[in-house]
Image (cartoon, rainbow, N blue to C red; front, side):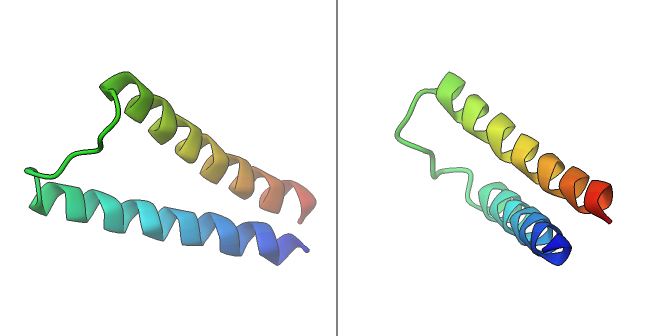
Length: 60
């Protein structure tokens, strides 16, 4: 059960790094939503990653 949080957190972190790398090399692409909503989505995603790592280390 504990490893599940770690695996999910690491997987989400890897996806975030790949997305940032893709976004930096393709600046002409954009999301079809407002910039404020984009920031909220990014913030929620980062919070979920942090929560997954907290759950892993708290239950360890």
